[in-house]
Image 1 (cartoon, rainbow, N blue to C red):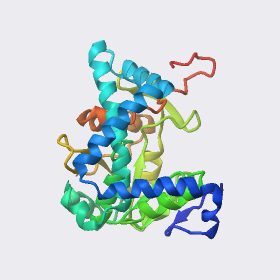
Image 2 (image 1 turned 60 degrees about the horizontal axis):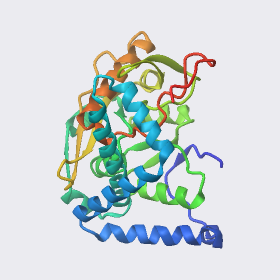
Image 3 (image 1 turned 90 degrees about the vertical axis):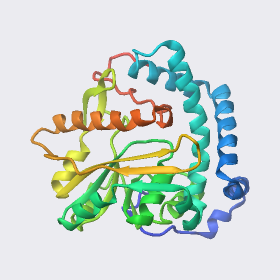
Length: 312
């Protein structure tokens, strides 16, 4: 599928009504109906879905379990097992986080949200700098984007979906309160947005392969492939990096966002030092609610040497 550089509107085509997509549309219709349910009911259903997923998704269970072993060796086996179970419960709930982010009205979102730290974004922009929101792949991230966009419409860095129906829906949903999406491959457009100046979402917590990566510590794993793009973006985009956190509240009754002050002396003179600093920030954000992190991702699939055995 062709990756568009900047997407400012979801493009609908009658081709999306082809019979091969009818079953998908039916499922989407059922999902959309669930946004009418109270959040408490959604979360109970999500927890059940998570337990079902844990029972049938053997490879994903293995990946998440192994990630927790590698990152938290100091935990007891029972502690990690409890965290694994809660992580799958949170993964099931995240289905409804996305549904709510894409289809809830602004008024309903406002009744279920809190946000602090907006002044850091405003100050950075007023000083003439673009804003890089340094986020992690937490499970309620879609809702975080929706909430932030209601305060300050921003630009998301994303990967287009291979399925055209899902691509249409994710673009339409993510642009409910934000202004544009940029392909994660288009560094030039990201830099242009930052120099505007504007606000861009950016994540550096997943394994994107060996290209442009350095191998540095991530939790207890000493050699995790980590991209250094934040340094490049900040330097070329004349931007500031602001750590960003979103969690679903412990009582499952809403969502909380915190935007932290811009990092001092970032970017520095050494992109590896910057990346190590970034990983420490990522760890701190994850530790706020470790059960809501995307542990199902094979974070350590790329090893320093091609001949190194897989940790999975």
